[in-house]
Amino acid sequence: MTEQKKQTEQTGRRERIDGTVSAATPAAPSAASTGSNTGFEPVSEAAASSGNPASSVPEAPSVLSQGSVLAVFIGLLVAMIVGSLDQTVVVTALPTIVGELGGATHMLWVTTAYVLVATVTMPLYGKVGDLIGRKGLFIGALGLFVAGSLVCGSTTSMEGLVAGRAVQGLGGGGLMILSQAIVADVVPPRKRALYLSAIGLAYAVPMVIGPLLGGLFTDTLGWRWCFWINVPLAAVAIVTAVICLPKPRHKVENATFDVWGTAALAAALTALTLATAWGGVEYEWTSPVIVGLGAAAVAGGVLFVLAERRAKDPIMSLALFKSRNFNVCTVAGFVSMFVMMGVLTYLPTYLQITHGMSATAAGYMELPLNIAWFASSLISGYAVSKLGTYKKLMVGSFVLLVAGVAVLTAITADIPIALIAVALAVIGFGLGLNFEILVLIVQNEFPARDVGMATAATNFFREMGTTLGASVIGMLFTSGLLRTLPESLASVGGTDVLGTDVNAITPAIVRALPEGVHDAVGAAYNDALAPVFWFMLPFAVLSVVMMALLREKPLANTLDEDAEG
Image 1: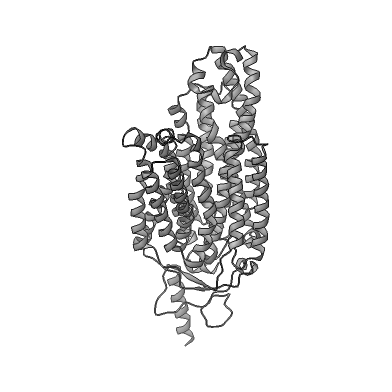
Image 2: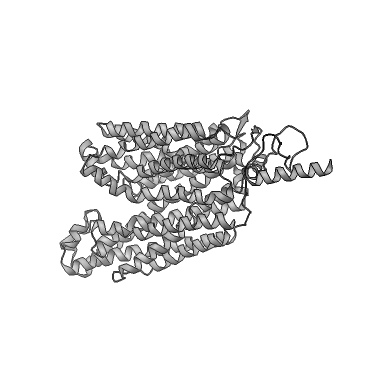
């Protein structure tokens, strides 16, 4: 009997390593089992410390065939492309859109409505997906996105366009979160890195081609195709999801919805998003409106923490922040997005004004960053899947980020364009190495029942880095330009030629100026931009320090191990 028992255990072990569980041989109980033959998994440390009384009834992880995994993955890629493309495809079409709809004064809301709603709903998708499963949510998110696209593509008013963008945001907020979490449902952590890296590419590629495609649609088929193109793409993703996505791996009984936490988070995010969108554009940064929004954001954040401490099923459990790796990766992800937005937002304008580039040429200057990102993303995904380790790779990725930003701190009007391109490529290579691996590290910290909440939380702070990176860097650059431009023009007697209104300066106007005045404007832009990179450098160095604190944790080889956490 002893020999037969030993043989049975070895067979079960081999089957679990291969990723399959025999229907005839029950899996051995977990080492952490309490000893009762109920089939329940032990409550994770994160769930226990959050005071969550809801009982999770896990099912055996759904082990899909390789063909099914690929089908699911293709659907996720299509969904990611749709959501990412929509964020940039309208950029080049926006002047035509607002001109036709007669809503130039509401232009800001076309972007703000989408970003605000998508950001607010990210944690909701993560937590609700953990509670009820992700398949229905994913299909619903795609459906909302299609509905919003149809509204935007058929509207005859600016108000309708803004409303359609908000509906798109309702769906778009869940596409990245659910895509990353669904990958975690069907692929073990050890193999997940390559899949997540491809997801990252599906997010990054449309960000590059979006403006080009938007211009093409506007000049040929019409700007409404910027939205209608989403419909067939999303339909493919919906059909794939209906057919191929697995059923939920577990159900949560007696769960309650975190109403107060959700309301407080929505209020804080709304105030912060509006403050960063309006500050320096619609209102002065010191105006009562912006100061009031800032205070409301802080108050909402405090109320959110208080609500999460008392919630039975918190939307973003404070227990997440007890994990060192979660904190390290979240801060590092925030910094990387902050730096990326700071680099990409104003560098094209600088190149046009100071170096006399055309808008197209300045846009192509971002290609080195994106090409390096694509290459390094695939490299990091393969390396982590092959080796099962990630700490050295993550430290190296942020060292590259520091090196690239350090080169840009030396930017001058005479700096070779090739050196700027190299610096952007170095930054892009560093970002590509860590963009999705940081998510993988976070997912590997928690059991499968919490992976949606953890994924949503880390992406939420990344989105904050994106928002604040664009607004804070914009504030620093604009304030610097308001100081340096009058001084530079006065030194060459150019004030009478151009004036001092920064808003009236365009690349075309600058190129037509006399040489001395042209050089003075270029010098002013250079003197305003260089301190921005010095401001970002300490944040990049901080990210290296954070990565040094990362604790290497083995990546699970099977979904069984991942479910146990």
